Amino acid sequence: MRFLIIRTFPSILDPNGYNIQEIGFAKALVRVGHVCDVILFNGHNKDNVEEISVDDDQKVKVYLRHGYNILKNGFFPGLKETVKDYDILQVHEYDQITSWRYYAFCKDKKVVIYHGPYYDSFNKGYNLKCKVFDNTFLRFKDSKETLCFTKSNAACDFLKGKGFKNVYPIGVGLDTERFSDIESNKDTGLKHLPSDRWNLIYVGKIEPRRNSLLLLEIIKNLHDKYPDIHLTVIGDGEKAYTDYWKQQASDLIGSGILTHITNLSQQELRYVYEQADLMLFPSNYEIFGMVLLEAMYFNLPVVSSDNGGSDTLITDGINGVIVKEFEADKWVNRISELHDDVTKYNTIKNNLTTKDHSVYTWDGIVRHYIEIIKDSFDQHE
Image (cartoon, rainbow, N blue to C red; front, side, top):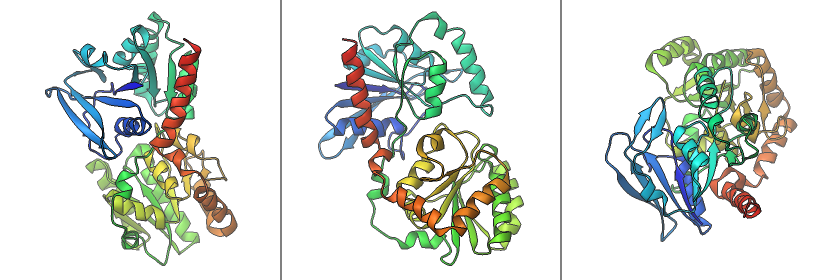
């Protein structure tokens, strides 16, 4: 089959950047014998084509297309000539107008949707946009039979609530090449994690959505109980908020309870994941949360809020912990259980270690994706 993935959201991406989801998806499809190319938004820049190597002699073409950003919708003039060479078009996000034009009106191609966002009270702007879209574009054309794939269970329920019938949560994959194409250096993690502590880590942006101040409250309360606990925060954010967060964290940093690192390479991060004891992820809202995927791929137990990624990846108490409240004492209690109960902690760790890790990769996701596509399209032919 010949696939074309159209990333309709109007943000400019570097095709060679780390874990660009469309590129990872395409490479996995090529590895199992299909043709798959990608269209990315290129703003006011000229059209261009880059090639991404897959294994030895295969390629993914990346069409960087001139386009317009209108109210966070990507519009791409002149796609007709490119699209005609493909059998299946994968468009991203049900509420993008370019996506809607294809899944609602394209009759000579098979079109599937790959969708990530979902309703959350924190996401007020997106909720309003969907309400407008549903009462205008979506109601003007019956597209409810369109085959849909989602990044999470929450996104699956979200689309079903819109009336879409054929919806399958397949998750998001990890492109492991950036982790594996390096020389092994397991001392890398130890440079960043104190060897005599029970090491907690947080990886991600420092911002209100990720409850960065809650992290400080959690680690302070934990350290009052357990002097051996240490938190390493890996990430940065907008300067004004990050400066405020650092000011609030200054006593913890000064006393050696917390270490802040603004950025690590993927190879360094790999060994931090492998050598940490626990990852904390108290985010209000996540379409998926790639750091959850990375941590679990490297067998690091996670204590997470209830969000798109954790709901899809974690079974509470089996391969991780989900805390639904954003209250420090609730988090401290669940983390304390793992600190105090070695058997409980090791059970979660072992469940991660013995899991088929292909479920965390694009190669594993694509196998499931192809099965669903074949079954669905065979039934409608």
